[in-house]
Length: 226
Image (cartoon, rainbow, N blue to C red; front, side):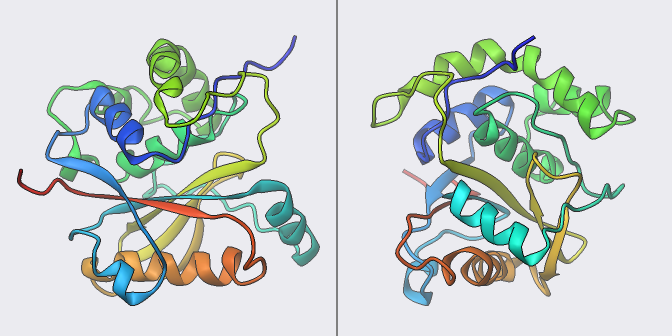
């Protein structure tokens, strides 16, 4: 039996915001582009920033991880994590990792996210993935083609991959549904330092080895008035 595949999401904050709101993130929250990794660009990002989604060239970066002895993470009871079972669903999985680890702060009461959190509280990461796909398949298919570029075919072999970055208990975690669990990436001494900690991590782990490649980051932040 062939693996199910979805249309891959574009790194587009408007589409990611629509997706998040449909899942039950409060409309006071949205995704914005992080325009650069320098201090001037980071100062443009509204605060508090509570999560980030990072896009990187998959084959290039994964080959380097393997050569260095890749860390695949491990389950942690205090960090919400799910596997990726569906092809090209890394954007949806990264979105879930970002919002589920900020549930109390960003979700609407009695929405899908709160229900899914309760229903999967005792489930494994793989079981969560199996429950997630049928629950959002239709929503994903309606939103994925809404980016600024032509949507790829569901079976397209895409070379870019999304991961989530969140802070839980004062620690920074990278969450990738292809791994076995969260990967701890350092300290976040204060909530206002989250974005800088996330940027330091991706700059060292992904950008510095491949400075000529394409990367992008979106941040989950409060929506500005107006």
